[in-house]
Image: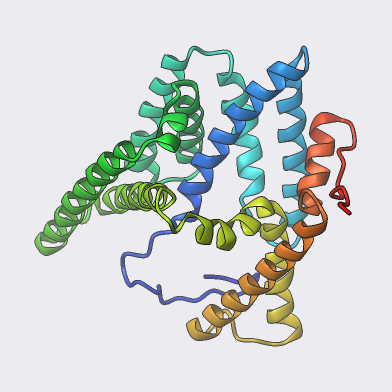
Amino acid sequence: MATGTSAVVVQPMGDWDPWLGLPIFSLLFGIGFALLLDSAARRVPRPRLVLLRRLGTLLAIGLVHMLLWPGEILTDYAVVGLVILLPSTWLPRWAMAGLATALIPTALIFGGGGPLLIAGLFLLGSALVRYGVIEQLDRSTRGPLLLGLLFAASLACTLWAQAGMRAAGATTHLSSLSSLSDLLLVGVYVCGLLLLLRTPLRPALRFLFAPLGQMALTNYLTATLLVLAADHILGLPIGQSLTTAYWTAGAILTTQWLFCTLWLHHYRQGPIEWLWRWATWTHRPPLARARTS
């Protein structure tokens, strides 16, 4: 947990403190990219030009954001998308799946993550769309259940192996195993959420998460402004106190949820999402919702 000038040294969960956001958002980015390609192919004669504009705009947003937050992730997403994801759209789906299968273990073994892992997850998300897996998982209960159990069993084995290596003092591959457990935990969480969405809890989950998800890019960027304001203007010790950091994060998340809920009552998209869509398709989309009498 960090601000622009300082960081919390103690991890909230001790030695095992996964950042689940990166693999989840990377996988979702690959899924969304493939779905956008399908949509663009039905609407325009040169669909990859649409994707190129989308990634180029994301890169520009990321570069501006980097002035405020040097550790931001949008530039990595845009560059990996331009170098790996966009060219992969010319490949058959088996080749895309094969590249993902090769890149993800390589990233875990040699880098512990980074752009190589992002690339692998991008490709995996796109391959899942092209094989129809995403559509099947959305309609199925058995699929997420079996997959979640497989992830959970693999996670238990990985954690057991980590504990054994620590007890034996063998630390050579601990980093790789830790990254692998993060990915498996992500799989458990995603499958668990898919199962919950098949229950009567679905309306409540949509009420809680849909506003934030529909304005994810706007929230990501405004969170930086709010954190910097809390740190530099209010003087909150976010970088020194975990308690303060958690309370600040909760306050920001609550504020964003309220703003998103009110905004989406009047408008179709978040302001940054609207601008991104405009740049992607090169024509201004409607923003305000149609008034009903």
